[in-house]
Image 1 (tube, helix red, strand yellow):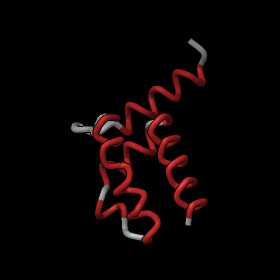
Image 2 (cartoon, rainbow, N blue to C red; image 1 turned 180 degrees about the horizontal axis):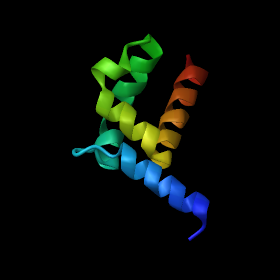
Image 3 (cartoon, rainbow, N blue to C red; image 1 turned 90 degrees about the horizontal axis):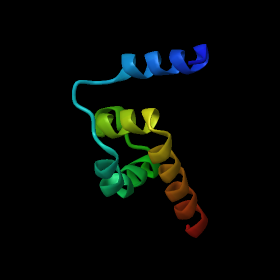
Length: 75
């Protein structure tokens, strides 16, 4: 295994929490999260588990970016 891949795995493991939201839970509430972002809410306080998941999961973060872009384009 290449060293950079191994380093990425170690970093991900270090950031893992005892209880994590899964992707299905994120997708179910992603609209709420995006609304909070667009309002400028304190996500560290209001939705820390969702924020953490989006920082860790590239697929969910991509969905988040797509939703933000769509809302901004419509508004």
